[in-house]
Length: 254
Length: 254
DNA sequence: CAGTGGTCTAGACCACTAC
DNA sequence: TAGTGGTCTAGACCACTGA
Image 1 (spheres, each protein chain N blue to C red):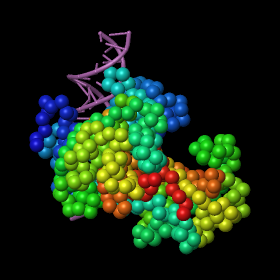
Image 2 (cartoon, rainbow over the protein chains, first blue to last red; image 1 turned 180 degrees about the horizontal axis):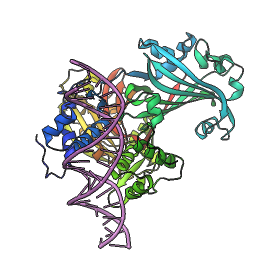
Image 3 (cartoon, helix red, strand yellow; image 1 turned 120 degrees about the vertical axis):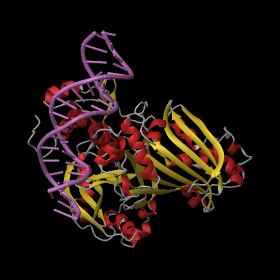
Image 4 (spheres, chains in turn orange, cyan, red, brown; image 1 turned 135 degrees about the vertical axis):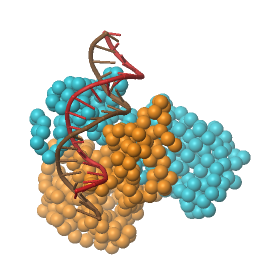
């Protein structure tokens, strides 16, 4: 399909449409190189600015990725990590496996949790609201970055009420077998249920950098609250790379 | 902070950073107008192309929205629709309320389901895999677009095995009280559980148009399977505007 | 070294909006 | 009509890559 300069659809959209079709249709497979900008200029008889505008459309859709000095490539689908509600099952905790550990082993992945901060901080409003405490009250936070197969996947901040965390292994780098949930249960806070809330947006530049994300890839904001008999005992706030995760939930019909 | 042209950080990023700070810091509230492009050109002493590049960064983060002939504005947070697993509770079906109806009423929203297609089609691979049938086998599909408060929110395709749907109210525009799930249960397919899978990406131009989405807003791909005693009876494939939805799940700790 | 994408300049014409 | 953002041209210099 040649470009129609008299069409209502801008030229750069027409070029993007054509390239997108070749990508989604499989003619340009993941990892393959698109024609260079100068080739596209020659092909479509337009200027480099317009060609780049078309390529930016594709990049902002998460379809392509430019590599300076080399070319523009179709983005690979990347490594998928499946997050299921099964990871919270008591039997895994009792087997000494934290949710993260169980889930990584289940998928035969190497995992690593990089501890960024262990500190007492004023509660952000999002956290305070779920703990039912005033904003700014002290809470203890464990900030980590989760790597799976040496790829940064997730920024994960766990918040606790200070009296449950300070002076326990929850405030240590290594929380021991079963993770923080096992430590909470040892303190007598038997976990009864979790709630998870997911929302969706584009990353800030800082998040994009820390999660090594390409342009055009959204993030998932995850807020989890762990309850012990209606008492919130942990608020977990996380940002996950959207192209590397699938969330899966099983829901009873009753 | 004035711009530093000798910095490693490109000028357009520095401009975008400064504007982003004013937006996230609240100095530029949702709905407010950013300085015009020509004002920014004067302020930062650069060209319009570079200013526009900065504005494009913000737009691709979903923070701003241009209106031709008027200006660039901070995007409003939009109407949020909460999707909870509660909407699948049997008691709501028994009260004659489909999941969508219950959820809309719960949030005091006006809703409308625009039926786009009712047809027998070859099963797409995604659907076939979940029905455990060969790809291309005939399935019955109800394609709809869901409007909440007259805003298009969701593209929703429900797939059924033909023998459960054709000749029943499931194949009609109006499926009756309690919706398709009630009709399936009347046929003896008692619903026992659902699985929901969520993944995340940027919309295609067509989806962005049909959901009236701004640039820089991701979509959620939702695949739900309704089971009657391990038999899949519906595969629900949906695309939702990411900035207008929050998903909320309750998970047992056992 | 030639070719690539990343950034930037200095213009132009257009459609649309508000006055 | 003046001002806005949307599109497009025709160049420039740069950092980086692979041969």
